Structures are given as structure tokens and as C-alpha cells.
Length: 208
Image (tube, rainbow, N blue to C red; front, side, top):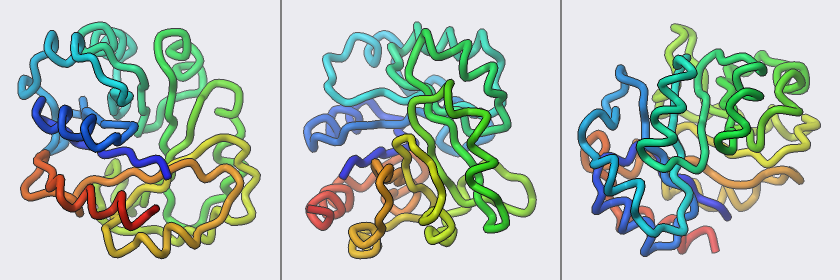
């Protein structure tokens, strides 16, 4: 099971995730997020770190230049687009990094129709819990994963939204041929942007 830990703001915690063999770590470049990277991480230190984990930059409706600068400054491996970005933007960025396109799920969507325009221009999808007030993630709640069961996704995807250690059994029971991993954040924090590594280890062990 692939685990992506999002909202990292400390170099020490990136190193700890590397030590736990967590394959993806998310750095949030959305200024309105309480986990906004800002100046909390040294660009040079992150870029030059010899990590096996993939550094994922998370953006919401960004300017193209801002993404390209972050890829270069931090040595990002993957870009996650969590807003209303177009397939054209995904296509343009795909030469610079792998692309995760995130979709916000409220329960009324036609999943096949939603993802179809992005099929040729992304490497992964991520399905997160949507909000009626149009906020971008961070609800800390789960959507009904059953909405994905009959969708022809045909691309590796992450489940996101309020996932906690207690959900390990449910995660193991979820079946879809393209299910690739989970994205975790707030349930594993002692404060915004500071993770409880013992809980992450607990989750990893529970998913074995």
C-alpha cells in the first residue's frame, strides 16, 4: 500500500518519512493552507536531499511560473493540482514533473465524465472530499468510497479525506483495480504541519 503524507513543513520530518520508507511526501504551496510551506523549509536543503521518497508539490489554481519555480527550487518530483486546473495546464507541466490531478467528491458526480478530459495528461488521480462551500480539501471528512467502485478510472489513484489509523481495515477491504494508495494529513498531526510519526508507523504496520 502506497502512503502519501501531505502537509510536511519540517526537514526533520521529511527525513523521518524517508526512514519509514514512505514513498510520497506532500509540500503545500497554497498560501491559504495552515500547512503552507512558505519559508519553513530550506529550498536548497530539500532540493539537495538524497531521498528515495517522491517530493510532491501541492498547488491550488496556481500560475504556471510559480509551479515551475517550485519544481526547480525544491527539486519536486511530482506536482499535485488540487484546484480547477485545466487539462491543458496538466499537459504543459507533464514534461517537468509527474502530475497528480485531484478531484473533490461530494457524492453527486459522474466519475467517468469528471476524469475523462484528464486521461491523457496525468500520471495519477486523487479523490478527496468536496465541500459545499467550494473550499479546496482540508475537510477532514471521508466521502463514500463506493462511488468509485464501478468507475472506469484506468489510472493509479489515491484516496484522500479524513483517513485515520482506525481506517486501516476499511482501506484493506476497498477494492478497485486502479487503487494505488492513500493520502493522509490532519489525522496524523500534533499541530498543523507537524506529524506524529508514531501514528504514521502504526498505520503502515496496520496496512500490511
